[in-house]
Length: 281
Image 1 (cartoon, one colour):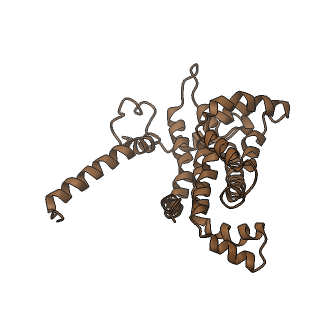
Image 2: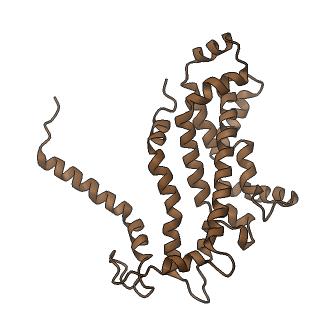
Image 3: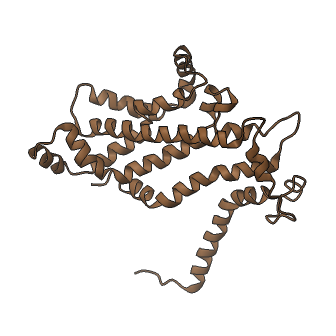
């Protein structure tokens, strides 16, 4: 028999959820509030979320950037890199996943085992070989090292996610399409790809967030200020000698979260659907 819920159990439950949610959101609220504080109050009154004086000039000061490089340049570079990576991840990951999930070829099990192994491989292990390769190609200080790998297979995690999703699509749809005259690529383009929409949106969201937040790869390959990303632009505010402009730094940090917040807000339904239905028959 189910236990009857009383009003005080609901109060305790929702009170705990609200308190835990506030703890999770508090760093973001502090960052937004501190972006409007005077520099002297950011750490002296760190516990307060209400500024004694709203300093709106932190935003134009941060947007002005450094010298001739405004923060609009960093945003433009990040959007170029992130958009390209998202497109590359969707195209390459879906094609590779379709091959593993539906086609039969030699060494399929061995290659799939290698794919699973690379999911558990730390990025730091491949960092030096990749840098040597891209340096020999003359791609250092260009966007190519950050974009091209996404078009050559994408991220192993994305491929595995799409493989599990495709395996949940009935094979009878493939057979019906073949009877109607579809080729192998036609089955992928006309049958599988439209049904992959929730999983592809999930891949796009993760690719966008991971690329937008990436600090290590741009730090390694992008040394010129005018081609750096938002993550590196925020780092440029920190100077041990002349001091850190915390107001401008927090203001630009707040703006840097807006694209991710908007993407997650509008595509949250597809993200949950793509993850929850992956691997289900």
